[in-house]
Structures are given as C-alpha cells and as structure tokens.
Image (cartoon, rainbow, N blue to C red; front, side):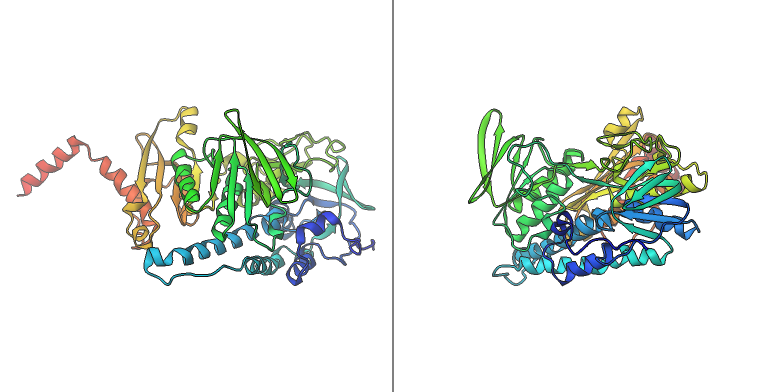
Length: 516
C-alpha cells in the first residue's frame, strides 16, 4: 500500500479554505479530504481515469463505475469542488439567511408584522452554513465513492503520457480519461491586490465576523449575489464595475430590476468605473478608482474579487498528453473529445457554461462518448441558469439578440408579474416573464423570468424549449391557483388571444349571429 497523504503538516492552501477549523469543518475534511486517507494500489489498467472531483468528475466516475467500468478518481484538494465547498452550497445557505433577515426587518412595514429590533448574529449564520455543508458533504465523500467501487486517489495528478497519469509514486494507465479540473477565481492585475489582501468565492465563506464595510469588484452573478447578501446582513457595501449596469450579460430590463433592488437594500453601486489600485492601510483597504478621468476612493474592511473564472489547465501535464489548451480552457469538440482521442474534458475547464447542472449534463455526455462510442453532442443541450439575487433572474434558450444573429425571426411576449394574483398577495410582484417565440408558430425559443422564485419556475420553460412544447399545450395545461407559476399560463393565453385576428373575429361573430 502507498503511504497515506501527509496531513500532519496540512497544506496551508487547503487549510485556508476550511477556516475556522471547528467541528463542522473537521467533519467536512473527514469526508472530502480525509487526513488519514491511504491511496489504493493502482490496477493494471483502468477503463476510465477522472482527473478532478468536482461535480463533473464525481458524476463521470460514479456513472462509469455504475456501468461496470474500472474507474480511478483523482483530487488534489476537496472532493465536491466549487459547488459543495465554496460555491452553490455555502452561498445559498447565506442567501437564504439574508432573505430571512430582510423579511424580518420589513415585516412590520409590508405585512403589519412585529417590529424587528436589535442586531442579527452573523457568526450563527456562518456556523449554520458550515453545519449544513458538512452534512451534505457525505454525498461527495471519498469513502462513498470508494464504496461505489472507485479507486480514489488524493494528491496531485499529472499526465505523463497520452495514456497515463501519475499521482505521487503511483502511475495510473487508462483506456480513456476525463479532465474535470474545473476553474478558480480570476485575479485581475490590480496593483495592491496581493495574496491575502482580498477575498474570493473560495475564502469569503471563512468569515466569522460581519465586515462593517464590504467592497465587491465585479457586477456579475457572484458579485451581485454576495453584495446584496452582505448588505442585508448589515454591511455597508460598495460594488465596483466597468459596465454601465450590473449583470451585463442578462436582459437589460431584467438586470435593471435587480439593480434597483440592490440599491434599495443599501448597495452603493459604482458603475462605469475602472479600479486603479488597492491601498492596504492599518484602517482597511482603500479602493482607488476612476470615472471619466475623475479619481475617487472608497475605504472598506474586506474586499471581494468577483470578476470571473480561470480554467485550471496549468500543472496537470497536458503537454505530455498532447492535449491542446488555452487560458480559457481545454480545447474540445462537440463530443467533448480533446486533441488526444483517448481523453475528454468536461465541466468548467471545458465550457463557458460554468454551472453545476451544466457540469453534470456534460459528464453524462462524456461517459457515453468515451466508453460506448456514443455520438452525443454538447451543442444539443438546453442549459438554463439562474442568478440568486432578490428577485432572481432565470434564463433559458435564445435571447432576442441571439435569435437575430442567427437569422431567426421571432416575436416577443412580456407578461408583468404584477398581473399574477399570487405574486401580488405575496408582495413579490416586481418582475416579468419574457418569451422569445418563433415567428408564426407557438414554439418557445427562449425565456427570461424575473421573480423571487424564478429558478423554481424555470423547469417548465426549459422542458418547453427542449421538447418543443408549444404555447397551445401550455395554455391547455391546468396550473394550480394561486401560484406564481400561473404566469406561464397567462403568457400562453395571451399568445392565443393574439391569434384571434380581426378576420377570425368577424367569422366567429357571423357564426354566433346565425345561432341567435
């Protein structure tokens, strides 16, 4: 047997991700990077070796092993990757807490509820997050995947040839391999932003005290979600971005609603600015920025960088495996095959859709194509996404601009949320549904939904886009009343009424005159 991984002097890089080192984070480590883990002896040859144990890697390994393949799984840091450890799971725990705090503070004004007084307990919020994350981590644990029949190797994995990967002193030979090394936070070359002076999504969840002043550089999904969350907890939040509005990749009307909500929650938006440098002082971090040539500055206690993701392609021996890559990620074809025909790549390292559910879907394609001569294509996927601000923005399929670029003629249909009874009754009627419909047909090509529970409502629209379920079918489908999902039926009914042209109405009028 190989020597156990060295955890007596635990990797400082790993330790900084699991602070504070309390009972819950120790339980997390026991699951996703066990201190006493002993790597198995490698088999002669694996049907599949998976490099990286985030969502894409875990799904790839479990799916292949479930079909009877000999599988090895390699992870150098934490099994579960971004989603479990410093992405979806911890962030949504914090967002849920912030929404509850916001609801308590506004209950008196909005619903005649009791007046909330006093300060909240941010440390309790973070402890709850760590407790829930540790519990969920059992699903991604090394022992669980070992019990599935997978050889789990904890350590640095590196290709040494076109059909072999080394982990420590072990060499793993394979028929096929899947690269699922994910991505990391991109750190822009801002003077003063040295290691340790800023937070990223990997380290922000280690906080135990609420920063009085919280700065965010980046107005994308991560930046907006956490800026609004910390503002609702009570931080004085300033968000900086070069763009003229937040969430620049979303529908401008949708982004505008979220932006107004963030401002109401107390976020100071410094938009259309360029951050020049960050000055570290005894009193905090001074962000120097410029707008239209005019310099300005804001002092914060903590600074979050949320300006994008960088693919993890360095240091894994891609050159030795003849796998071509760019800074943006590994080059793959539509079947997720790299320039080495034995090797596939999935997840954040190989796609612009950096979502957990996209990683899952791509992994399933890679299993089919790598082990069973499948012909599944990534381009056939219909990938929805949601930004979990308040309100949320959920989107699937084509936008109007994308349809225009492809030469597809479309109609737009927009239904305001304040026409939906349940939204009015809940006091959450700020938002809309916008459908991109193929001209002359009832087929939905894309949708944008702005609502408090937009992500929960997106499933029906995703199915409609994927399966070609038309507005006629949605209109004839009974939706429970009162629910916010009724907005989908309202949209379909509105579309059907629009088909009643003046000529058709005259024909019906003549028909009913005959019956009188």
